[in-house]
Amino acid sequence: MSDMIETGLIRISDDVVATIAGLATLETPGITAMSGGISEGFAKRLSGKNVQKGITVEVGQVEAIVHLRVIVQYGSKIQEVCRELQYNVREAIENMTGLRVVEVNVKVEGVSFREEETEEPQKLLK
Image (cartoon, rainbow, N blue to C red; front, side, top):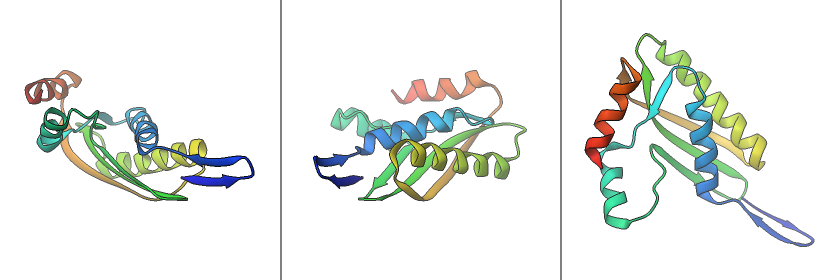
């Protein structure tokens, strides 16, 4: 986001928007973890960049699009959890940045039976 004010320009980094989205995601009941995926693990190793795990954002001048990859707790109603997740992420970003969130796309990449199970596969990717 950039906003021209009499005193200068304000820009909000993609990483800031991704961090806000990540915190809102992990605070949503029924979401146990973000899914980094294999390709993101390779990107971290090859580029050395701090890639936001399971989150991709596209930030324009006044709008943002968010793509999330998540793991849902077994027994949760996936549709309900994902709708609440979309709402929470949209509200958090819009309230903190003033950007209008036009899309929050959620891809459920796994189901967790226990919290410990989601951490073990991720350790293997590192």
